[in-house]
Length: 379
Ligand SMILES: *Cc1c(COP(=O)(O)O)cnc(C)c1O
Image (tube, rainbow, N blue to C red; front, side, top):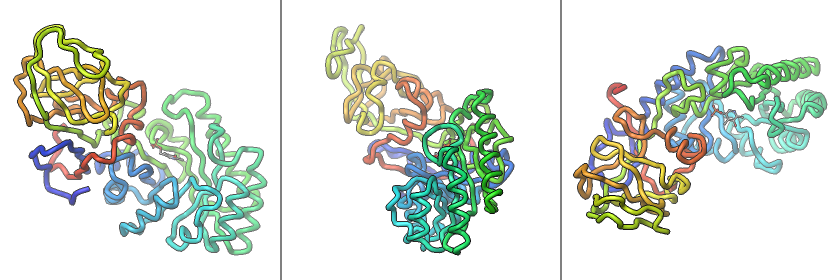
């Protein structure tokens, strides 16, 4: 990751992944405006592939008040980078180093008795959020385990070894606003809060909503929203004007004339139907372009959409340049916000039968990431 520059340099010496912090700032402000309560910036998985520290700093400067991650290691990396904001870590093995986490002021989600015991033992002074499964049967305590967890947490609190500062849940269908499981999840969360209260707990942070529910379901907001995807411009509601923050470009490594009938790539899955120009793009599935998008994906060359042809390889892809006249060294835009007609991450997700989240978090480690602020919006 390079230092923050005023504008991206245009010299294309290899593939580059530009992260637009101006977009992340605007997205954060939009989400903070929608959230009834506080905004937690979720920067797990390296900030959804955009750089956890850069996303965290930008979000905190634009309305987020907290940070959220999965593992303690991710939380400690934020501390190592000098970020002092409250951080919550919600997914850890029972034998994680909670002592180090607590010493670093990292708050911990507790999904069950085993975790509660481990945190109580290892981390006196721990600030914990009890995690209730609100309908996904995934993480968090199952409803039948909840009262027992709340009672045990209250006992631990009385010894002074933990403080229950929060209760959290998560909705599995919030991207479908009228799905009946949303109100069922809200009801279960409200029940969980009542049980906690009846056990003598007084959690001040009560949080259920992620990006989708923050945008579409105010009843789920409680005291805080935890948003990740929305910060980087992934908009499950497709209606709010969140702006994608990544642009992936690469220079053409070579250009060749190919006669009609020329087969391209492994398996010869594509054969030039007419004489054309082919360009070599130095990006492949090792960089996170899904091989399953072969035969569907497009890129932007000289302002026009051109198809990638043949199979995507590990390190390279071939673009049918047609008569664009593109030459060696010219930049090809693989995806971006879409302003100039380039494909978006959402289109790549569609070509790949997946969601945007998987594309942005699956980009390969050898991509050079460069963060920058735009001087003004080009929307
Ligand atoms: C990833 C995650 C979030 C953020 O979800 P988005 O839909 O990306 O906003 C919130 N809460 C939990 C528990 C998560 O795992």
